[in-house]
Image (cartoon, rainbow, N blue to C red):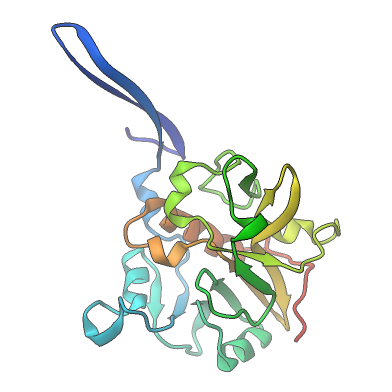
Length: 245
């Protein structure tokens, strides 16, 4: 259906003959406006990603072209005009750029070490078993994805593969900087999936959601990306938390 916002529609499934139902079921489907495929941010974006099997040997287009298809003015290099950096592997050059005042979206879903906060896989108590844990998005941050928490099947392809630990989660001053996370073990073992913070004079949003992996085929991944970008470059992004190293 044509919708103007994120809407839950019910898909009714029915099989039968001569008015006799043989089987029937229903499923909830998240429907997003088609206009949301395109980015709202129009500034220059540097997209700097690690080489992967999908991008090797020229078999697939470079990662920045995927962001171009979503409407971003994307390039594969930092330039004097760059207003936003999107990366999955911050290098010394990128970190210097952020410290000098740049904004960086760090897609930290892969198993590389983070230069900022401790990140580990979702095994053990952070495994995400549905009956003893749930993941959430902070209301008000995701302008398009105004969905209820806990997150459910529409997020299947983008669910985090890791958690961010070691943050002072009980400190009320930094709790607004926790943009997504999970609670495990009947409201125990809280962990972050997405966090905003200051780094030098710049700002960073670090997320373990699998945005990059699902971007080519999953509408929720594209909309989640747009929401994180729009929040990061807005005046509403005023982190208290700092990474000072």
